[in-house]
Image 1: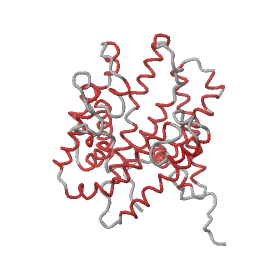
Image 2: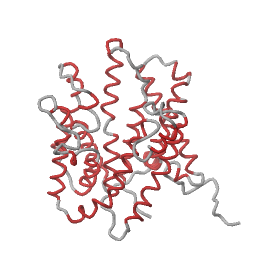
Image 3: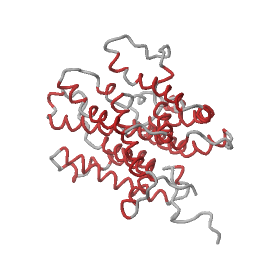
Image 4: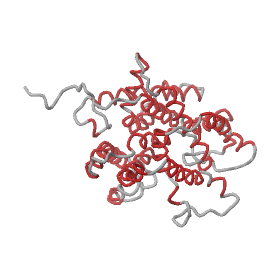
Length: 356
């Protein structure tokens, strides 16, 4: 059995908790003028969105750290089959569920056959599924980029990541120069989530000084506030979202800090058990949490009767985490659970292979 690496589990657990917290606050109705939203609620929503944004880069980086490069002794089709079957079945299942309930508003007016044949080419269903569609694409790249990683130098990887880093400044540069970000752009092939994927491998093998990263992170944290009150007026979902320099800096700092603190160590007691459980169920929690949150938790009288918006969001987070984890625990003990939530318990409720 492959030995678990504690700092991987902690990164996965932290990213999972960030995802739930990001989605916990009640959404402000579309079209609501910003001046009609109380300042404390607007500030909390902004902070909640921005400070939890590293969750997606952390997941991509962790995947790169775990998968790159694939082994020389493993045939390509064997690798693709082993790695993708854990993702593809849950994705298809939850895509079908989402399509059935019409949860993809962009596609709701399209006929069902159109939505079904579009599945391999663009994410369908609830918005959280987009991440997994991108991840499948990155998985497919692993056998292709692995030979390069096995024989390339650190300097070559740093060159690629440096060019990728330039693309993270596009939201700021486009105010001053005309940028071509389509397929004709010079750095088109050095942009996107593959950068985080390769960065995860790089940070597993090498280190970047935290003496550099921590001050940069401290500078990045107040940037959305300064953007608002200094009148910079950058688009939040471009300048401070997943593919932006501040979020990349915060993500790298979190990854390196956790690695530095926990590499080569173990966690025992309740904390170790909690980290282990959430890490094991992370895919299932990611897939299920929004459905539980919006169909059940948001409608509970206990939640609706809380007048303080921040306290209400924290309660939603806690209830969603507990309920989703419990559901994943039950599902993990059923046959074929690995095709539903990507994990199968060592102690199932019953063993279909057990002989009488």
